[in-house]
Image (cartoon, rainbow, N blue to C red):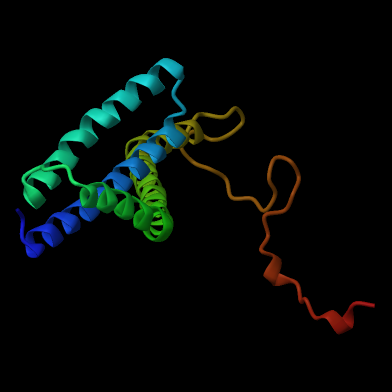
Length: 169
């Protein structure tokens, strides 16, 4: 016969097992939402979920009351699941989705930065090489200074003309 303290300890372990099963199920649910597996993969992943959840529950019950199945153990498991899904699930899902979003943004930024780190010097060298090509009609190595471009637009700074609005009417 167990003492009342032993039964309370077993009940608390069963509640903790229910909370842990709820967390595992939320993680599994997030994975299924992200991966969108087909039926065969879903069946296999359901089997793998229960193959992972069963030993975890057994360890909690082994710690709590030497894995004796009593009514309060089932009551504790269901109470833990109910508490998790009614109170903690929305918080955990939001935290995990936020962490996933910022992890994706951080990794995307890092990969983009590494890509730019390696491609930008090559692009700059290619642009510099293209701008240094010999052009017909120009002096070799010496560029003549002119205020007009080849397309006829002026290169003169716009600040040389006065831009006072009340003189323009």
